[in-house]
Length: 375
Image (cartoon, rainbow, N blue to C red):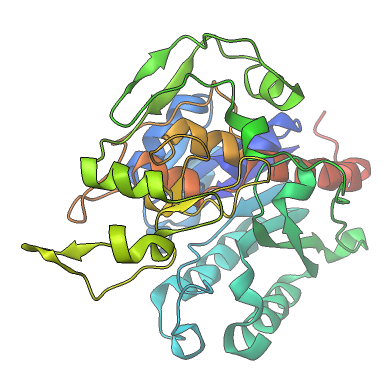
């Protein structure tokens, strides 16, 4: 079965579908660093780095040719829908919310048997539920039976309490309603389960390519290391002495606000005074014996390692997202505000966890199999 991957990012959704046996005919994203990562890990897939609003049908057909497209995948950027956006209910002019309609446009060009659209849970509450109703109506008008579910990644073997809205449509002529993977209530993987075999490094240490140094300690680690001979993207951020002292004071389950009086942020240019700006989501030390909270694009500053006094490395974040160790991230590791493109951390945090994508792909493959014949 074949896919077209829109808003592909670094390729989390694409990887899950590839592992389930799907073949990607075409992928696209606007970000150049995502393109570098995608091409590194999917060299066989033609990738168009472009704004989807400028992509024409002929652009894609020149690449896809006469091959039939079975599924279109994609997660339009979620910032406009996110629960973190306090203005989401009045933000209906946000151009990021309009990108859905360009996804719909590409769908209408190819009319695949099915589509999968991923987004944040905040999508369901936007405009008091009117946005998700509009999305379902638009897909129905094009010719699809549509349904959606909130899927929690930890219920599919991902060591992370990440909720995502998954919208699936099946073309009307197949006379099927979408099916969703069944969660496994007994498969939760903790942070320690996920990363305890990685080389122990302190702030400012690490290399882009380093030996494991220890054997895998559980099935999850064996799965992550299956096709990899080394650890990539495992470099810890450099921290000031003051920041390391702050981290030392933060216990599992605590964050910056818990140590504000003694270790809170100070004003720029005046380190004798505390900053009046407090970020509750910064510097939270995760529990090692539980799945991680949502690994968002900002996870480089959101979380502290459960046992070490530093932030997570990109590889540790990738493990918590269920990217295997042979999946290598390209582009700059972190970025300054004026730099263009997504950093490795942002690529990882924006991605669909591959194991969640794999579960969705397997369920969809089973449902579509009777209708697919490319021989």
